[in-house]
Length: 588
Ligand code: C2E
Ligand code: MG
Image 1: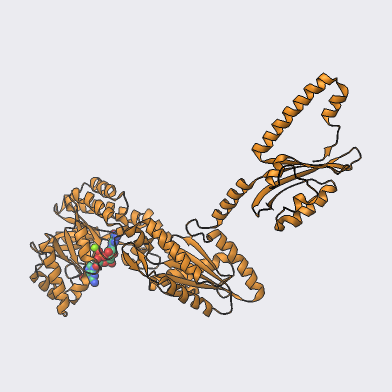
Image 2: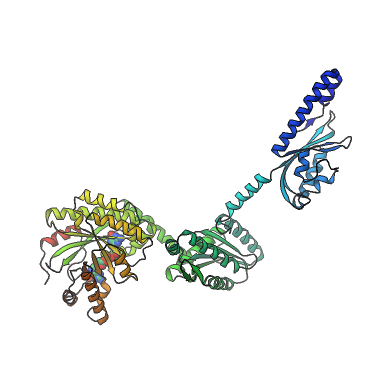
C-alpha cells in the first residue's frame, strides 16, 4: 500500500474558516487526539512519523512506552534500531532500506529494552509519496504483541514437547531424527535410535496412584537425560515410553554403552509410595544406515526390538533384526484374520467332559475354542488367545464363546441332561470389561440356561491390575448364581491371594501337578494340599489333565471332587458330545 501526501485537514480548516470555527476545530482536534492516545494506550499501539523533507521525527507516547524510553526524550535515527534484538536486526535494516525506496513492511520481531527486558513487537511501516512518487513521509505503527507471542510460543512448545517432562514429543523427535539422518548421511557417521520402555509403570500407577506414576516418569526422564552426551536427544513418546537418539556415532558399541549407562541410572534406588524400588526398563535399538534410512522406519524398528526384549526377558536389550519385522507383519496378519474369523463365526467350540467323583458320570463340560481355518494351521487356543488378549479381540471372542456354548449346552440340557453343567474360560481382560455381566446374562437368557449351571473359569497366572474392580464384576456374576472357578491353580505366583480376593467356588488343579503326581512326591503333596485347601474353604476341587488310570486312582484317593482329561474323554464337538453322553459308561 502506498499513501498519497495531502495537506493536513487542520491547516486547511484554519485557513478557510474564521477564528470561532478554528477554536471549535481546535477543540475537536484535541478531543480526537485524546481519543487516539487512549486507543493507542489500550491497544498497545504506538505510532511513528518521519517527515523526510524536514527530518522531523515523532513517536507517540505509547511508542515511547513500548520501547521503554521516557516519554518525550529526544529521538534520532538510531533510537528504534538500537533496541531491535540482535537476531532480528539484519532483517529490520534491510526492510528499512526498502522502505526509503518506497516499499512498506510489516514484521514481528523482538526488542531489547535498556534494562535488558525482551519484548515482542509488530512493526508496520508505510512510505507516503508525493505526486511525483517521491517518498516524503514515513508513517508506522508499533504494536506490543508480547502477551500473544508468549502464548503462541508456549503453544508451539507444547505442540512439540511433552507437558509432564518437558522432553520433545513424537513430532519433534521425528523432525530431529530426520535432521540427524541427513547430517549423518553426509558425514558418513551412524545414528542409533533406542526405544526405552519402563517395566512396571502400570503396576505403580495401579498401586500408588497416577501422581506417583507421574513422579516416576519425571525421574526416569531425568535419569535418561543425565546419561546423554551433548547432541543426543531424549524424547517421551508414550505413557512409559521414551526414545533416545544417539546422533553421531562411530560404531553401535556406543549404543550398547548408552543402554548400560541408562540401566544403571534407572537402577538407583527410588522411594515410591511406601517402598524403595529400582526402576527397570526394556531397550530396543535400531541403527542408521544398517537397519533403515527413514526416521519413521528406525523408530518402528527400535520399538519392535524393544517389544522383543520385553517379551523374552524384561529389563533386557535387543538390537533390531529383519526377522522381528517379518514376525510383526505375520502377527498383524494373524490379528486381522482372527478379527474376521470372529466376525464371520468361523471359530468353533469343543467340549471336554468333566467327571463327577461321586456319581462317576459326566457332571459337566468345559467349552474350549478352536480356529479350524487358522492361517498358520494351528487350531489350538494357545496359539491365538494370547494375541486376542493383547489386541482386545478377546472381548468379542469371549462373547461369541459364551453365546455359542450356552446355546449348545442348553439344548443338551433340554433334550438329554437337565443337570449338565457348562464351564467357560474367561480371560482377565474380559473381567475389566464393564459390559461382561450383561453379556453373560444376555447369553444365558437367550439360551434359556439357568445361571446356576454355569461356571466361569479364570486363570490366576496373571497379576490382577485392578483387584477391587475384578472382585466387583465377579460379585455381580455370583449373585446371579454363577460359580467361579480358579483355573490352573498353583501355577501363578499369587494363588492364595487370588483365592482370598475373589469369590471362587472351584479350584482347578493344574495339569502340571497331575502329570507329575505318580513320580514326584512333591507334586503329590501339593495336589493333596490344594484338594485339602479347597475342601476347607468350602470349594470343590477339579483335577485337570488326567491321562492315566493311576493318576485317576491317586486323585480319587486324595478326595478330589471332579476329574477332566484324556483318560476320560478329549474335547469334542457338540454333536460328538451328544453321542458320547448317550453311550456314557460310568468311570471305574
Ligand atoms: P485350560 O482352561 O486349562 O483348558 C484345558 C486344556 O487342557 C485344554 O487345552 C485341553 O484340551 C487340555 N487338556 C485336556 N485334557 C488333557 C489331558 O489329559 N492332557 C493334556 N496334556 N491336556 C489336556 P486347549 O483346548 O488347547 O486350551 C488351552 C487353553 O486355552 C485353555 O486352558 C484355556 O486357558 C484357553 N482357552 C480355551 N478356550 C478358551 C476360551 O474360550 N476363552 C478363553 N479366554 N480361553 C480359552
Ligand atoms: Mg479352563
